[in-house]
Length: 135
Image 1 (tube, helix red, strand yellow):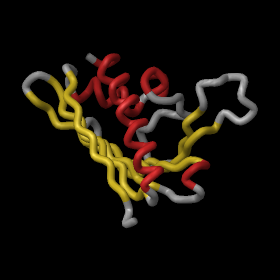
Image 2 (cartoon, rainbow, N blue to C red):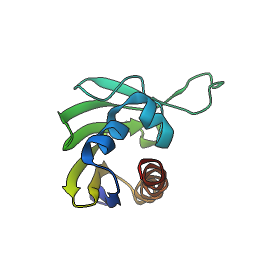
Image 3 (cartoon, rainbow, N blue to C red):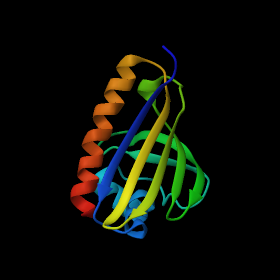
């Protein structure tokens, strides 16, 4: 299989500046995705944590912020233990529309059909939570 790509576009009843905060601010990310080790507002490494505060190792996923163009574009790498060393890339693009924001998420570099299906389903769940929180 060639590298898989997941593209999701959702429409939010919030201006790009508000949506941006939910993509980059640590406490807002925790509300719809996962808590992070820091705000994703500058290029550098970061970690996502498990929701289970009792877990011995809370680190769940990690990556590096590559591009920060508020409130238009955020790009970061993304991996976790089940990707077995494969580092993927997630790009968030925010486009203002009359009633709010068109948010497009592109996740590239996925190597197997199982990983593609799992990530596709996971993004659906997370983006639904984001829509419910931001709207």
